[in-house]
Amino acid sequence: MSHSPRLTLSLTALALTLTLAACSQQTTPQADGQSGSPFVYDGTDHSWVSSDNGLVGMDAEVARMKALAINTGNNMLSGEAWTAATNGWGPIERNMSVGESGTRDGRMMAVNGKQYDSGFGVHSNSSMTFDLGGKCSRFISDVGIDDEVGNRGSAVFQVFADGVKLFDSGRMTGEDGTKTVNLDVSGRRELKLVVGDAGDNLDYDHADWGGAILVACNSSGTPTTPAPPVPTPPAPAPTPPSGNVNYGGPLVITKGGTYRGNWESMNPNVPAVLIQTSEPVVIEGSNLRGRGELIRGWKVNLTVRNSNGYGMNPNIYGVHAGRFIAAEEVYNLRVENNYMEGTSGIYVNQFYGRGDGQTIKILRNKAKNIDGRKSDGNGGYNGDRYYVQFAQIAKVQNVPNMEIAWNEVINEPGKSSLEENINLYSTSGTAGSRMQIHDNYIQGAFAIQAATDGSYSGGGIMLGDGPVGNLGEAGGYVDVYNNQIVSTSNQGVGIAGGHDHNVFNNRILSSGRLPTGEINKAQNVGIYVWDVMNGKGSNTWFNNTVHDNVIGWTRINANNSTWLNNTWFADCSNTCYSNASWSSAVTLDTEEQEFQMWQNKFRAAGMSMGPN
Figure 1 (cartoon, rainbow, N blue to C red):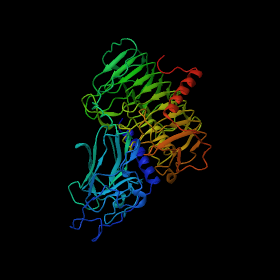
Figure 2: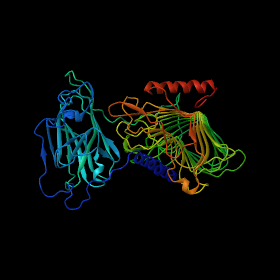
Figure 3: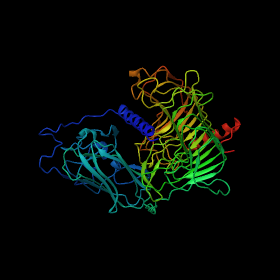
Figure 4: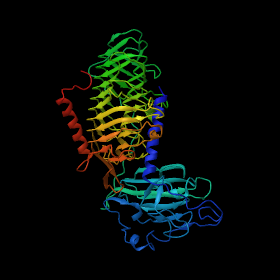
């Protein structure tokens, strides 16, 4: 079961990395490490101590900034005066990288290709202290080693408030991406930003506080009230089915037939239901819960309908909740009108069926919080995730009549973690019977720490994932239409490989914000079409089309200004056309209205969702 999701990770993570690289050209170091390079420690003391409030003596434009008053709302920290500052080599720079030898001799800050026009460029062994006066609620900044030193340099970033350390980045080098600081500073009077040399030397230690900002400040002089400590909540209990359910122990099915009952397994290594027959099996009107897989089988001919499934924290360190269904080497699979919560979704790996009507259909299910978070072994989670999906179809090739339709999938930040909601890995329909993915409502796909983690890989629907060496393994012959995709972070829909994918008449919207109003740090693009694995080189990339979709994919800058990043068509020109941009601002209210539209839609179509 593990190999296909891990392969999926490599491609989607690669897609995110390469997308960022393509959008922001990497810069080369200005020094080569040769003798005399200004970036290499020469044994001389080049340290610097500020003799003023940090604005005196700077150019006229910077000097005009309001330095001594924190304005109501958000304040870029580089426009505020410090009370004290030191730097390990040369002066600290505002809104540019540290140049070492003199004032204003840096360049635009950039970490891992992402550029910043505000913040501070410092050298290791630096500190800056600011008087907040208890007026601001949060401090947010990206931190990392500036691209101008390449993969060299090493530093540790720390943040103190009123003498208490609130953040420690650990050792970071030029090979690392950014880390994001997002701290509650309510009621704090003194903010101190420190960069150490990671215990080695000063060579190439150009460090950036990119986009440093004070959020939700109150200029009236009334300090904000410190927020009380928030304990880590226990794992949310799954919503129980209606009525009282008496669960029996795990069930092993060894012969065909229809099964109804309530089964559970508190052992993560034992499925609630294990199927050990290729005869037709129907599970209906049942309730399942467990710390591992709920339904598991190989070489199955299986129908699951009108049933409830509840995943539970495995309470073993590093283990994630089990699948609602994990089926491999499948002869036939139908999943209809079920409800699942807290599971890691539906996983299908390889298809052996070729008989009349044998196929895969996932229809009219309701899913809440697909969850790949790994347990800390004590009722909580350890901050890592496994790459799961509402539905992943892996290595199912040239199968007719496949369909994923009329499903409602809603994931909440902080209660879920998945990769794509729907992922097709090395999977294809046929030229005469294309796979249909239609009329689904998909909401949410978030990083574990969605307000601070910008490196999240995942989204709504991914097509053409997997190897593309030949037509047999490249995905293709898929229609994606009439879906509503809301707030799925990295992408709404992606075509990463394969052929004959057609994406049309979908509504793809995101406010770029979390339900709390915070910015979704991993927000990226509405639809992308990109030949990630060079299918053109193996003649497996062709006939991929995207047309007549409505897209409003909001990106939010640090200053709260917004823009729409609706499409990235790196490998799609004439076959991507007539896609309409959302005509007004996409807000959290817009997202709620989209859900109401979905509910009206399936009622008008006479559909019933979940168990009947």
